[in-house]
Image (cartoon, rainbow, N blue to C red):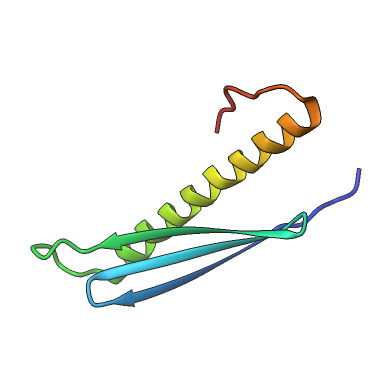
Amino acid sequence: MADKSLTIEIGITEVEQITQAEAHLRGIGTSELVGRGTARCNPGDENIPDIGDELATARALNDLTHQLMHTATLDIEAHTSRRVDHLRI
């Protein structure tokens, strides 16, 4: 079996109290998947940028996970010609 390598690049931007992250997954087939996540600082809370980065990144990776599971489901269905009802994360 050949070794494979996937690359995830995460970009984070912060504008005022909103942090956005994009997670780009490369190395599967010819397509690139992009997961997105956002974090907003509650106006009554202290603004700690690292926490916003962590939350936005976690949400972007979660979005990416769901997209990858959806892609895998479609590929299984195409290969087996049978509907996939339950794949677990």
